[in-house]
Image 1 (cartoon, rainbow, N blue to C red):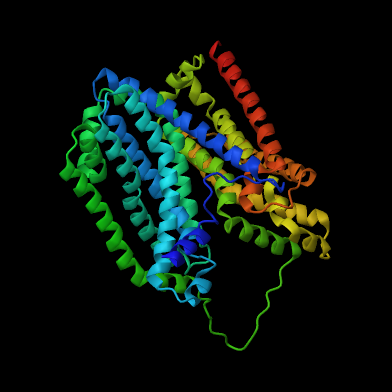
Image 2 (cartoon, one colour; image 1 turned 120 degrees about the vertical axis):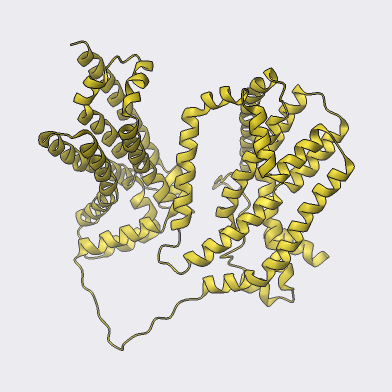
Length: 502
């Protein structure tokens, strides 16, 4: 038992941060204070959101739906987070060889991995569920059994999402290990999730207003599909000791059976992931010689595609550009009503005359929002000195980074251009101007980004996320581009207003 406890303590010290905070000072007390502050801030943010929903539910006397919604939302978020986190907490673990060399059963090693995963997801769940439970208690008169049911639910609800995310994470890790770009699944899932969140942020007010009207139907649908939500709501509103025991038994049984089954395949998956593939050779070595520019561009593309946080941060604006072009093409008739809410009076006929202007604005948005070159030099880190020592002109290195960003951005922008040109039948002159803008605007944006990165490099970052999300160059580039976006939006609104008066 002591051995198991010591192993759990040793594994809990790494990769268990809900909030990534870096402090170079020897005194780490400020880190703890910052974590406490972020937890409190997040708690009150979720609490205010739950309060907003509760105000709608009180009118229809369906307060219990708040718990159903938060259990479901938290389960989905835990599942998504678990798929990402399983890669670092279960698979690709650096200390597997060390642990397996010790006199420890394989089942014990797996239990430690899963238990660590469970503790992380329990903390993650608590950030969402505890504020919702507090809101429910402050608005509904509850009995003591509610607290018992809620504590057990808080401990047991992460189990099913963890089991599912372990299965999906194992499939993704095993499958992606066979391909060159192993992070494609993570990038694709993150993009889909971010687009979904972006959609919710624009429709949140309408969804909350409709929630009160359809609360009963929503609750019935969720509870029929997802047993844990139904069981917890039943315990919270109509407590029964047999239901509680069944709730606990089902979750513990799922956890136990999953550990037994997973222990037979876990180490096979892990070993296959770490195996280096051997390719047959013919005995002849063929050396492909490329120009310095092409070699540098290939290197930059490889670095870009192998860094998920870089791809997600840079390509999100481009994905939104494609989504916006598709929505404009499909929902063109509703655009005048949307502009009317912003006090821009324009008819469909007038809008058709200025579709090239709207496309130009979207290209500006995509170009200015995608910050690629503002992180490229910082991502080199200490290896940038090696690159500078090569017999290559500095301007060649800089141009390779800029051209790489253009190569990444241009296909997305051209797809959006094609959608507009085909859908709205732009003239030859308009098409030519749009194609020129599709090259010039990203070029100007990325040249500005590389200049900022040269001026404010961050070469001592601990990881890629710190460079992409927290570096000075990224902040300066994003802030400047946001100001330009606001100015462009103001000019476009003024232009539509002036044109609509004639």
